Length: 331
Figure 1 (cartoon, helix red, strand yellow):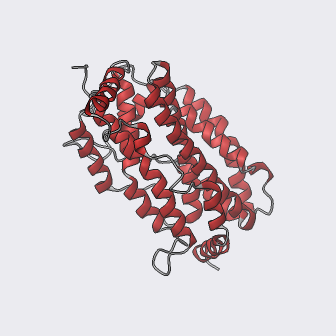
Figure 2 (figure 1 turned 135 degrees about the horizontal axis):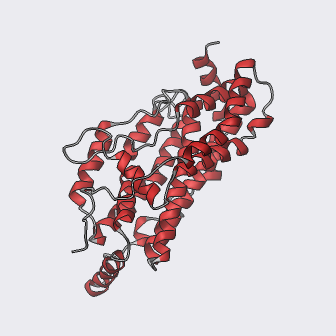
């Protein structure tokens, strides 16, 4: 049996449990939070509404330039959701054509939960008065139009490694942003980012369980997929980020530098996440591996120590890059 056919058979085998996994990791639509829970009530009296907006704008002045760059980048990443859904819908074993199978139901419901994140952050940024929304909208449209290539092809094993990693990375980022906002007394923004982080952690646990289940039935090929993704390195979903008039990807490095400079998401966090996945999936205890997978396991077990040494030598520019998204000074 070819690797492609084997993966398809494993996905079909695991599909019987998808409904139970959705019940475990996703929240019913009528119960989950919505963006309006964290935004000024537009149906309130005019005076009350503008009072809340004024408070948002005043508290926004307490947060530094680099913070706004990171918040904008996080929001744009969340707003590029159509790209992620279309990618996952094309993964081997996800069938949206013939009766919408369990995996396509998962992708749709996961997408529906994720959609709220960009929505609430977009509205908050619009009200804050600290950003250039037209430039942000242009960047968002570019990111969706440019698409992305995360190096997983249609392979479900590689895609689930990617989503397990990426959901935990977004948890770290939103959680750190929440802490910075809280430290300056911005309770609304802090709660908003904290609850987004909570969603990301739930989703991380879901995708991590998908991987655990695959390790139980196809350990060698799951190990090889994990090895492949970590050897090529996890590509961030916003790696094609660009601003008006610039080439694909030209804004991502500076956005990444900004996130590292204020400690929202660093190279050390990347290695920490790798180590957490190795520990969670008990890579050292997996049995039934073939020789190639045993070598892949050895590589993975040694990788965090090697990457920690590299991360310690990384130098981040001290000066902020001037993005078109954020005004250089408060007006």
